[in-house]
Amino acid sequence: MKKTTRDRKSYLLHGDCGVHNFIFNDGELFGVIDPIPVIGDPIYDLIYAFCSSPDDLTKETIDSAVSQLMIKKEKNIPFLYEEVIIGLYLRLGTCIKHHPHDFEEYLKAWYYWKDLIMNVEL
Image (cartoon, rainbow, N blue to C red; front, side):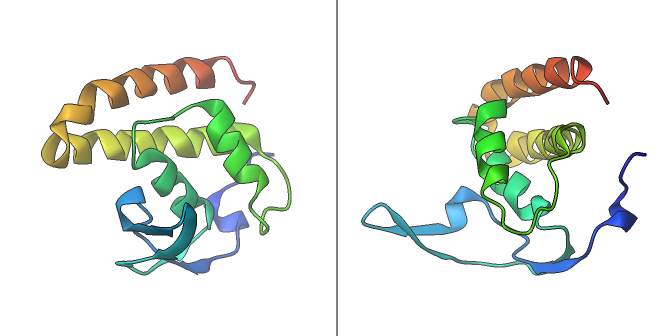
């Protein structure tokens, strides 16, 4: 049975977890600023952060990050990857307006994830 958003518990989230809102001190995460509070699944903030920079939008990166989430109960890879491609789609739209120089990298990531999803058993 496929999980839906109704099957998940909601949490208060940061809502704008882009890397531009991360504060580092001596290479360590020191804080996250500029929240836009929303209610939802913690995976939202993680995917938002993941998609906020075109630097490393690979399967291995998101898999590693998800493995660190303490709230997760089970690893639902197809669901995760579907959420990533939605995050990328939203980021492509934002990118055109705010970071047009990154668009080509995001478009490469879009095709990478589209191909990946087509080859994952859903």
